[in-house]
Structure formats: C-alpha cells, structure tokens
Length: 225
Image (cartoon, rainbow, N blue to C red; front, side, top):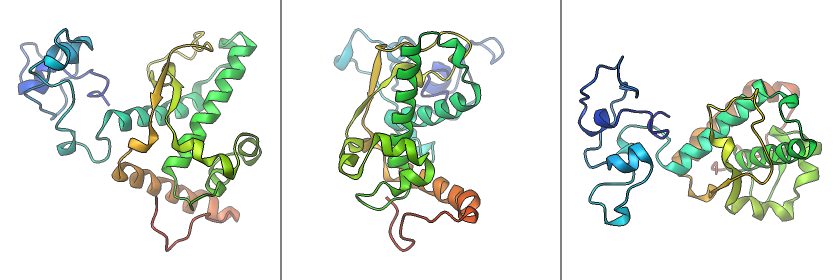
C-alpha cells in the first residue's frame, strides 16, 4: 500500500539507502521493493517536466517480483475501494454530510461501487445477478440492476476521487456531489487478482451464509471467473 501511495522513501526504492535514519525521514523505510530506474520527479512530485521523454521510468516495473496479487495501479485502486467500503461501514457519520442531496448522491455511489466490486470479484454464472443477491441486499440490487443491464458493469466507471483517500476524515464534510472523479476499468484486473478475491467470497459463503440456508449461485465444477 505504501508503494502505491508514494509513502515509501524514494532513495530506499532506488538503491536501498537513505542519508537519514528511518526515524528522521518523512517517508517509510520498511520495504524490500527496489527499482533503480524510477523517476524521482514522478514519484515524489507526481509530475515530471520531461513527460514521455524522461529517461527514467514513470511506472512501478518490478511489482510482480514483490507482491502476490496487487500488481498494477488499477488493482491498487480497486483494493483501495474495498478498504474504503470497509472504513465507510465502520466510521460513517451521516450528520457530517449536512446537505441531503450530497447524502443521497453519496449513498447512490456507495451502492454502485459495491455492486461493481461484488460483480467483478465474486464467483458467478455468466449473465446472472444471483451472486449480487447473495452478497448484497436483494431489494437494493433489484432497484438498481437487472440481467439485461449487467453489461454496464463490464464498462469503465467514474468513481468519486474521495473514495480512494484512505486517510479521509469521516468527521469532516468530506463528500460533495459533482466532485472530481476517477475512471476505473474493472476489465484491466488480472486473473490472479480476481482469483484471490474469488476465494475470499467463497470462504465467506462457506463460513457465514451456507449455514443459514443460502445457496451458492455458481456451479462448483465451474471455473471461477
């Protein structure tokens, strides 16, 4: 997480050495990630005047060597969304969002993000919404989506940028409609990333839902997607 948030010390990433002890450096030192060709301007300032002509890299190129399932910026952003939904469930204060229109827009976007996450990351049968009904509240899902609209979940979606800020203060007036958004293409997730979360959803079903009589909406002999 610290790598994708640019909280790791650039010098530790570059060659494993920093002129300051970890207690005096403003950035984190605890990482084995190394990339000698990383652009300092891009990493530290999120901008480089040389752009595509820069001789150094504006991407994390060695992630496959260091991380089990988060390997791209898209996957990191989806992971942030999962963390945000968890934090929202535990810390949201409705009185902090004083405008009712902002509240309603927030609730709508929260539900849409949850639908996208469950649809892309849980095991399922093709052209079915049963997996959404299993893991999300059925009435809400029926109001939002039907089988003939499933195709919309396969398209890139604009998500409020604040949803990616894991340091956001829930006590503040943190959400306003029409704020900046970031486009996420869920089709760019790797099979390894999806399989990792397929297993989490399956374990949740086996541990929590099966004993309550819920039926798995996917075939056990079908390859998870």
